[in-house]
Length: 133
Length: 71
Image 1 (tube, chains in turn purple, orange):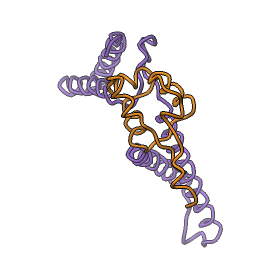
Image 2: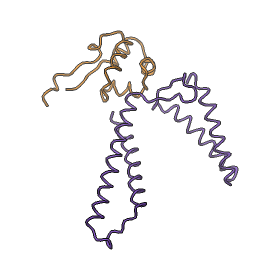
Image 3: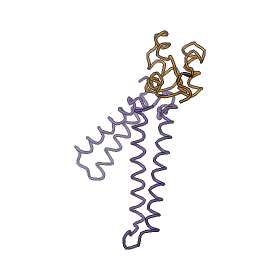
Image 4: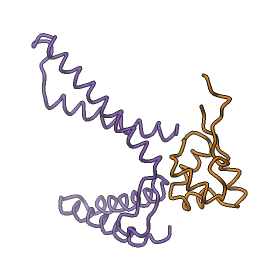
């Protein structure tokens, strides 16, 4: 992990800021410290996950996706987009054909649900595609 | 038609680890693993880079497997 000093210094800074914010928002010191440690660990895991190529010349943002990573991300995003659109279309059809008493549409709930399914699809597709390709 | 490769063999010939080859051509080690297992077909650019690092013509490192044609 050559040339990653700036990355680690900056991320420790971010983690400390996170801890300070938690304290300011009223979290107990032990919880803020634990949160800070977890954030630092997350950045270390990210650096060692093997998901990204390392570009030490870009000191503060040294990670980049290679072509396989980009392909997986693009595919996962496409699946998520398709699932969201299909769900929205289903809701529109349900609204159009079911009587109002049977299907009262709450726009916020519908959007939250489609977004949630989109996120789930994205991450599930990401995991499956990484295993397959 | 499947794209085959002998990346593993060529890498061993040059005494390179997967990580070293990955760094030389600017990808992750996982991508090298996927290519060697023929689960991922690299772009022409990446294949050319790999062939250059391994000092072989492109078609010596990657080729079509005609036996799987017609399915």
